[in-house]
Length: 84
Image 1 (cartoon, rainbow, N blue to C red):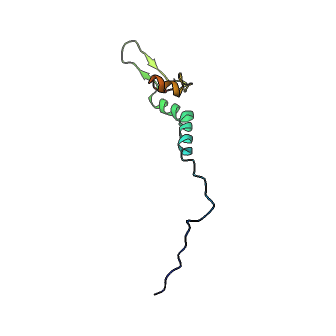
Image 2 (cartoon, rainbow, N blue to C red):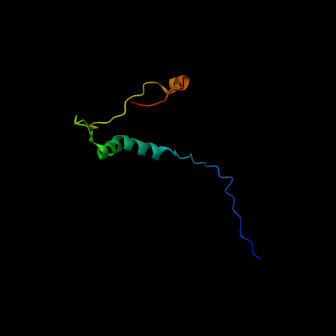
Image 3 (spheres, rainbow, N blue to C red):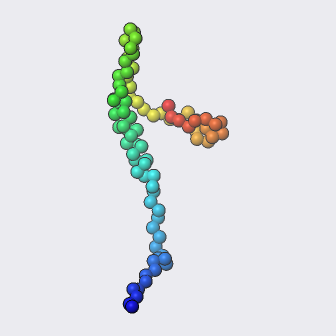
């Protein structure tokens, strides 16, 4: 019976840096913030009231502003970390 030669790759000196796994998630979120929010609101805009007042609500230019509190303040005060 003939045996195959075994190769061990356990002693390779060159180690590759780990990939940044959140890159795709962050890119997708940025794209959603720039384009997707407007598309999502375009599907439901305008919202019309059913009363006799004829109220209409439109989302013209949705945006995300700066957070009111920092992440550390929210943790200390037990607040929700959100953007207006």
